[in-house]
Length: 148
Image (cartoon, rainbow, N blue to C red; front, side, top):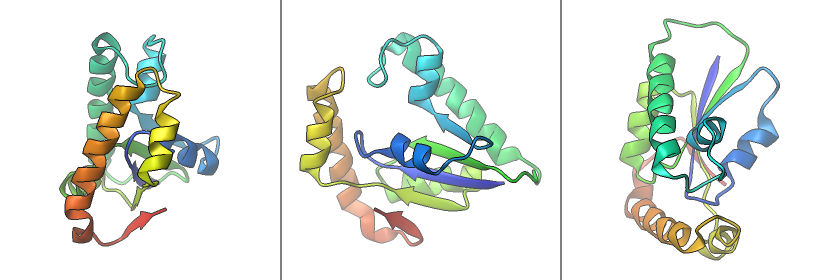
């Protein structure tokens, strides 16, 4: 089994990146997808009634993934998290025993344009700016990260 942690700000294309690479045997751990499974009418920016239980489920799944003794499967598990700081990515990667960490970052203008299709574009842009600020603070502290 291969575990890939995919990180980036809102609207960076994390879900699309995973969808373009995964096979039918692969698994994705993504809070947005889980919130939709739980009944959220939105693809992003979920209300707390969906977001909170989705986050609990993600945390449970990450714990299980990190505890695997030595599962031998020919699939890939993609874990989608925002994780703007190197410290957060390192913590998650260690916790889930990630084989790779991918950070997707697009120019702010691209992210803001994509945010216009989200349920709450203004809030999404605020989160994008927050994420980009955190990322810029410590992007030089990492090694073995793909930035596309």
